[in-house]
Length: 97
Image (tube, rainbow, N blue to C red; front, side, top):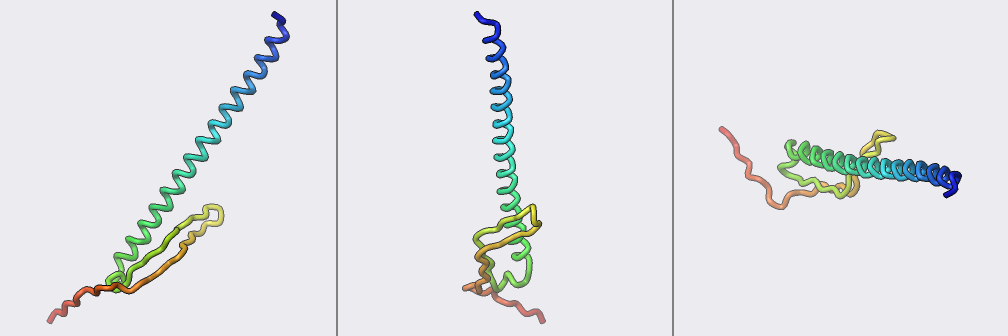
């Protein structure tokens, strides 16, 4: 066996291990970031609905929206297709004397 041949294959194996490790780390951080982003959007959507439902307006109107997205780099929140629709059945109002 040629000793120079072993040196080059060893050198390439370190590059291969580093490349595989780097790609694995990038893949991990991409999926972790995507998971955090989706859960953060879900939590914001739930908080928005909870805030609306705790107001007096929720007795008369329903809030519907299709997509909420957060842009971390600009620091803004975008809500698409927002509809505030009147409820079909209004609650009975009780007057106290």
